[in-house]
Length: 433
Image (cartoon, rainbow, N blue to C red):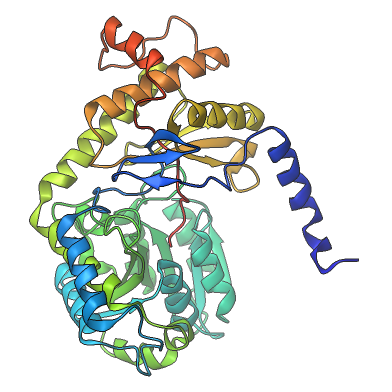
């Protein structure tokens, strides 16, 4: 028996997927041309699955700052933050993030995944209790496994269920930490944060919000869902990532609680991981400043999200419950979803494919993430292409309107004829990197 035998069921499912001629987990980009265009199998492809919300991956200032940091500081630190891996630029980014979030403290981690891993596994111990939304990201669940606190799951976005579970443990000693997300990465729905705050207050718990997909997206200044809902003072910890709106890699946690700094010596994922290279720190600082300086990017992102979401919904697709930059088309038959995804890629559009058992109710999702860098033409092309393929697969009635933003007959004809020439989308992972 091979040591890999335990993965036999997974291997069988993957083999069946590959035999269908579609392998969404092994897409390779031959080239990346811009924030929204790439080349896949020699074909120009429009990118609708990269979480590049503000379109900053090719920002000239950020790229120059990153290159300059390499010239001055080399390619890496070769050490952890508590050894030789803390440079001036790491402290600068932590100050910038703390200032942005109006908090006293900030810790930067080497990935967003590690930020959740490090904070959750450290903040609560065996005598405490951890309360997780059932739809939490894998990094949150993995953080709970690394730690020693008993885990209580509550129904997704259900404050009443959370309150019921806290009530049962009201007399138990120890701290209680609630973890929710700003925007959930699969369906794009947001947490009912005001209601969660009310529950947190009633039971004297702590609250952490993972704003990975809502940083730079929600709120007047882009601080996320807590800012939009006006409850920032009631959120004890904000965790986030640089790999979405800030177009790099890494993660962070900000807080104003006294004693926070001891976590640098208590969090194993922070202590025992090599720190990010100065080039990443420098480009992230630049992107954060752009986020703050150019709110019009967020305005454009919001408009693009509405255009795409309303267009797909108007065409008759079953989309997620809320309009955010994450737009998911829900398809009951996973085999049709796989074939649909394959056709989109063949015709020049890349997005993400999510399949059971990672999705609820045995459904599959065609998951897009809209960018501020998408033009109206990009979005209308994507709506028209998805609508045409949806009709071919019998998911939509033929008489359904393409979208509430009418495309001329001439342009629709051109769209069908030039699909290979226009940019399209392939979807990067929805997870926090």
